[in-house]
Length: 417
Image 1: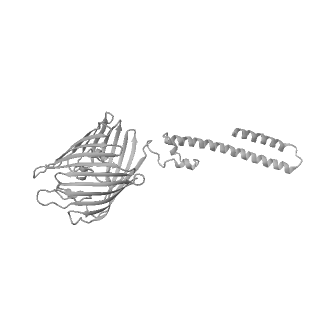
Image 2: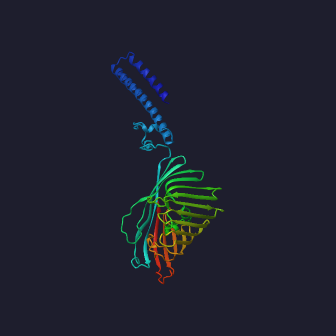
Image 3: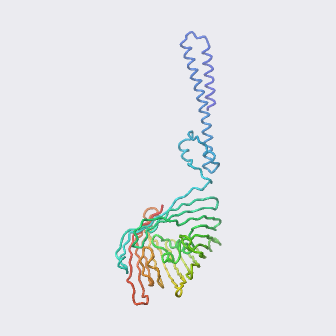
């Protein structure tokens, strides 16, 4: 199209030039012809500039498309982007990534409660009510290269001890480098431990409550060290092992370490079982060892789980302390947006530090039963509202004094982002 226009301009300018040089009796006509010829020359010059500009734009757009598709980033180094259309220029990142695919993904979630301590064995806690955030996550994930990724996660929560009045202060929950290939994963840094990582995923109701080993402070959800997990036989057999400091998400303060290992079996799509054990070398004669067995069944609209765990706590000045707990839970999706959740925990021995468990106020060294009943109502998207009750019944501890029961009523809100 452009070549035909040039030919037409050339022919017309030639004719006009010939007419201008011919014998014309009227001088004004001759002047008009000269002016028209000058305008045609200027139009031809502008047309050449537009053609060159168009070629330049096509080259820049081709380079931009190559860059966006993961090609050479050399285009981003060119300082002159004025010729790039606004929509295309907006697609160019301010700083070009070092490698394709290493953009950082941001996600997180928050859950908290409006709560009432309807009844408690301790009159200083009995009747308290308020609002708190039990967990807030802010997570940054990045793919560093093929098979390599990283995560940095921050957590924030309320103290939950009914006495501390402090601001929400974030801390690092995850900070690791991961390598993944064919169902196998290796982690270096602060990462989830095998202690209840799988059980918590099967329980699936972390906004409602922690799993038993987490709730009763028998292990930590994180540790700093090296970990390896994977599966074989098409996922029928899976494992997770870790060597860590034993300090959870805190700093190392001694020369001892903690080794943890879990092995699971999935004989069918609905049935799963897992065995877990750990040993922690602690300062002096205070070592600890834990073992746990778990079995679960899941269907299209329901799931059931059974769990038993025991921990031996070595003590320097008296016989070893053994604590154990059994738990059973179920979830039933009764409507398209509603799930009924029930759980029963039995502590056979009580805990010497039970009163330090956040968001509860258990009695120390007293065996107890915990019953949880809740209804998870999906609102919009993944936002959930969970009204729930947690009831603690204390059993006779053998000293003739049994604390009164505890009852907590909560309205839990969960939302991801």
